[in-house]
Image (cartoon, rainbow over all chains, first blue to last red; front, top):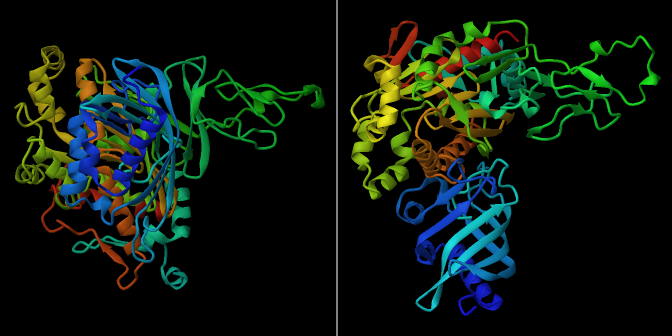
Length: 167
Length: 424
């Protein structure tokens, strides 16, 4: 069990990850992922991703494209950009490992708003996203890296307004 | 707003079909009364897409939909047929189905346990001795929608007995629908649930206009073009050049499309590229179609089937108006039947990359819908221009054919809108 984090270690990692996203430090956030990582927001978590679509099903290459698009291109849907404040709680480290990876569950509440001028449709409206999350973590060079980040929104199968900030 | 309504003769005056300056009045996006009239005069009087038969493969499968203002159940009965029923108990009006989709061999009203078969027949009532012996159940089934049509698996409902037959309605766009199906060598598609769903605070017609708008791509989707450049798939310059190719078509009955040219060259079309990569697919396609047909099939089209369906190369897009400034859009990704699994998996991943609420393209379009919805409230000048390319379009076989960046499809949409709204 040497390679499973304690709950406290897992929390420290997840809080730091949430802060990188809230501070829009997307490139540092991207560096938390291993080369074989998957970032997954399913619509229906019970469906096989090979046979249906997800809201997000990023391999490492597409994750890089996502971060590149947000940070290096004139992206309309994040102009003005989202503000987010994320709460991470109910952190559990699952006993045992799968393929040398630790499984960590948590709950997240993501609050988001895009500020703008008066009367702008879609702006100035705070939104709430509750989610249960699964992380698979692997120790690489003495620090934890994300192999899987799976975020299942409470409203995963409901219509969504833009989710182009990183949920 | 009230003043303007009083000065207008009818809703038809909100579209100015001027040969030099086709215009649409901004109130068509903002006025709740106009929205209510649209639901009545368009969505409850014409052929509205409600689903694909592959969503209901087995007897007992159902989904619920709203057409205009009307809640409906679409369900497959034990006779194998699909029925479209009003979701309202004949007794005291309760909805008999609350789920979005599922499987059930009957619909039981939760209020007093009246039970209906999947074809709508009333088959049971709690404590039925409270009704006379000669109570004729056959007169109290769930009411069926006036007309339901299964066209190549695409299900359309018309809540009115009057007006065009489905054959008349679809005729101008029919051959393009057939080409669209032709990327499957057995000409069938299978919807893969669940759909992508997004909702934006804007009018439904903004999505209807934009799906076949060839003018916005280089500006709204510049970030997407930069991603393609990053991945070395295409330089921004090459993408922008590609976006100059093809035509925009406005058809009769409100239909229209944006079309990129077909090709048998793997470098120039997705279909030809897949045929080169997968010999089985190549063999099946060549056995079914001539080269001339393959040229048409390999053309990429975004086809609006008026008023609420778009056929895209990865998905069926359904526009669901909810309020004058609230619209839901559902993207039903489909598998092409009779092709290698790897082709469909590639199509799903490719779809996710651009489309859906967290794709690299859709959110930019949604942003524009909200920007327009904000802007059209300003009444300094009430008219939006849809006249791009009017001076250079040509009429061929009853179609208005223009440059790929021209607004021919949007003009067709509003001509049909005007025709239907004038009947109010």
